[in-house]
Length: 276
Image (cartoon, rainbow, N blue to C red):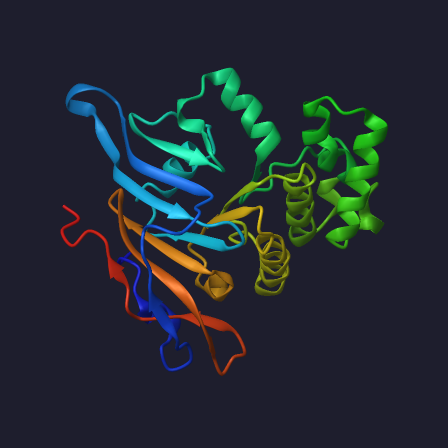
């Protein structure tokens, strides 16, 4: 797969691209000099090379690039799941990369929501019980968690499926349950790993409309890892990676496309001109 290119967007239909920068005013997320390798000695593979960038709140940022370029490793470090070898990650003023394991666990359950490609729902319990799980982990009572879970299911249009188990629902419905579960705790940082990869076009658009509505909150930052070019128009900025390095940043401009969607500019800021 080639590096990200504006050609993906069919320039005849998608105009209005603009250069982006790695730094933003009042950043919500600050990633500084992240390096990561797996293995030891001659078998060591370095997967992230001095990754640095900042992201604002109130936007949806996409992280794109070929399979194996380090995207999942990077968001795992940003989400306080995986330790970096060097560098730091700050999430809304907290240096999560330097917390101990207990501190990371506490920070995750109170501040970070995750949405996965394969949904990761529990098929032996109902939709509302799946949504309630993060609240129960925080120590809320079952009664309180149920009220909040049902309210969140209503927000994603699934109040009539609250008592269904996931295996009896469509893929689009399951992904909306996963979104409700990720949002029920009101996380400040939402990480979405290929949220539309398992969905058809219509369900993918429904999911992205939900996430776009969430992302406009000025107290929240949303990051989406994706290969799905169908949803690029939902992004406010796109960061591109290749070979474990940040390559370019694209920002949305207010130009309307003939399709009625916002698009991006075909003039990237090249961050690393020699990725080797």
